[in-house]
Length: 389
Image (cartoon, rainbow, N blue to C red; front, side, top):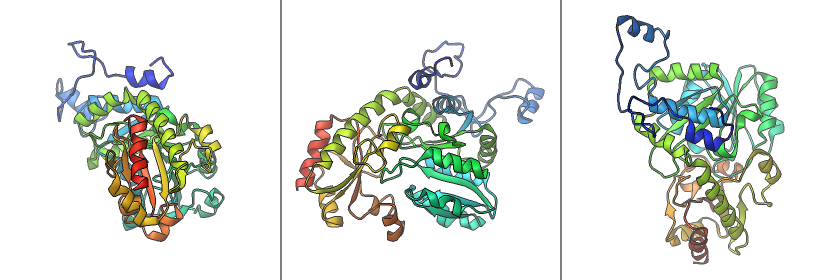
C-alpha cells in the first residue's frame, strides 16, 4: 500500500482478486480449505506455509478486515474477533499468567470492569485502578508482577481524555505492555501506537460498522504479542465470522466520511446542550469547556461522536427526559447512523457499584448520546423538546 492516507488505505487495501477479476472483494463463506497434496497439507499445519486452513484460524475476509485496521493504526499485525469483549478477554487471557497483575484506569467499559473484578481473579490475576485525573499514582500501583497498563481514551461513557504519551512513557520505563481501547476514537481520529501503545483494541460493532448491523472486535499491534493472541484464539475459537468481516471491511471504506459528519454534528449537539437551562454539565472533547480540551486537540483529529451530559434534577429528571424522546433511539449501542440516547447508570454500567460509578463521573443523571447521521437540527430539536418536557 503506497498511500499514507487512512482514507485511501481503508478503500484500497484488498485481498487478491480471484480468476473472475471482481472489483469489490467477494464473500468467502467457507469453513475450510483444500490442499494440493499430502505434503501441502503437512506443511500448512506445521506453519511452514502461510495459507488458509480453517476459518477459525483465518479467512480471506477476516484477513482483509484486519489488514485494513493494521494499515490505519500503523500496526504490524492483528487478529479479528466475534465481538469487542471477546477481543478484550482473549488479549488478557493470551498474555497473562496466574499471579500476574494489571494496572488499569478506573474509567473503563462496564463489561471490562466485570472481567477485571470478577472473572480474571479466578486465575489469581488482580487489577489495581487509577483515576483518569490522577496519573501521578500509576507508578505507586506497579508491582513486581505487573504486566499491563490498560486504558480507554476517550473513556466510556464520560468521554474523559487520558494523556496517552504519558501512559506510554510509564509503560516503557517499567517494561509493561501498554494496551489502549481505541473504540470511541477509531483509527481515523487517533492512533495510540504513535504514543507508545503496544496493542490497540476495538469493538468493531461501533463506529467501524457504523450502522448497527454486526458484532465484531479486533486487536492490532506488535507482532510478537499478536502471535500469542493468535495461538490462544486459534485454539479457543472466538474468531470473527467471514460475513461480519466482509461487512466490516466494506464499512471501513466509508469510515472517514461518516466520522467527519458524526463529529461535526456532535459538536453542534454539545454546544446546544451547554447552553440549555436544564443541563448541568456537558462533556465533549472538542468543547473548550472540557477539562482536557487542549490534550484532546493534541491527540485527536476531531472530538468523536459521543456527548455526555447531566440533566438537572438527577435520576427522576433523567427518566422523564428519556421517556420524552420521540425521534432518537433508546439503546445501549453506540456508533450507529441513528442517534442513540443511553442512561449508563441503569444500563451499560448498572452492575458497577455506585461508589465506583461516581468515582468515574457516572452520576445518576448522566446521559450518553451517540450522535448519528441524521440532520443535526432534527437531533437538537428532539433533545430540546425532551429537555423542556
